Picture 1 (cartoon, rainbow, N blue to C red):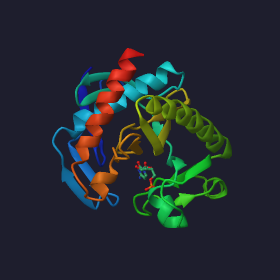
Picture 2: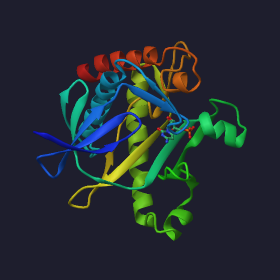
Picture 3: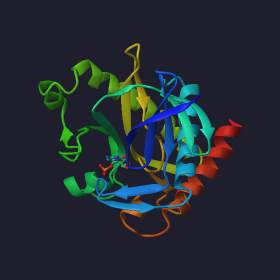
Length: 240
Ligand code: C5P
C-alpha cells in the first residue's frame, strides 16, 4: 500500500489517501491538545501508545461483531482504515458523572448514571462542537432520526463490550466519545480512534485517572496511565 496525499490533520492524527480509493492511511502524532486545540504539546511516544491501544480495541470490537474502520497496523504509529464519510455527530456515552456532565449539572463526580447517558454533539470547529438533541439534529438536516437511532444502538453495544473488557483488567470505563462514518456501500460503521484521548478510565484499585484528564488538568505525566492501559489490555486481549 502506498501513502499519497495528506487530506486531514487533526489534533493527534494525520490522514493520507492511498493508492486504493477505499483505504486511508492514518499516522498517529506525538501530540496532545486541550481546550479544543487551544493548548498543544508534543509528548514523545504518545502516537505509538494511542495507535496500539486503538488497534487492540478495534480488533476486539470486530471480534465481538462491531463493524469498524480499522483494517491493519502498518507500523507502531501507522494504520490502514476503511475510507468513510464521517457523520458530523459525535456520540458521548457516560456511565459515571465526570467532566462537562459534572460542571453542567452540578452533580457529584463519579455518580453512577443509570441508564447510561447518551449525548450527541454537532462536529463544528467554529461552534466548538455544541451539544444537540435529536430534534435539533434532524430539524437542521445534520442527521436523520434513523441514523441517530442506529448510533445509539451501536454506542450501547460498544459500551457493554468495553465496560466488560476494562472491568476484567481492573479499570472503570467512566465515559467515552465515538465517531461514525458511511462506507462506499453506505454502511454506517464505527470510525476515528479508541484511546485514553477520548475515554475516561479510572484504576479500580488506586482510583488513579488513566486518561487525558491528567493532561487537561496538568496534574502529572499523562503517559503513565496510557502505558498501564496498554499493558493490561495487551495481556488481557492477547490472552483471550
Ligand atoms: O468533556 P466531556 O465530559 O463532555 O467528555 C466526555 C467524554 O468524551 C470524555 O471521555 C472525553 O475524552 C470525550 N470527548 C472527546 N472529544 C471531544 C469531547 C469529548 O473525545 N471533542
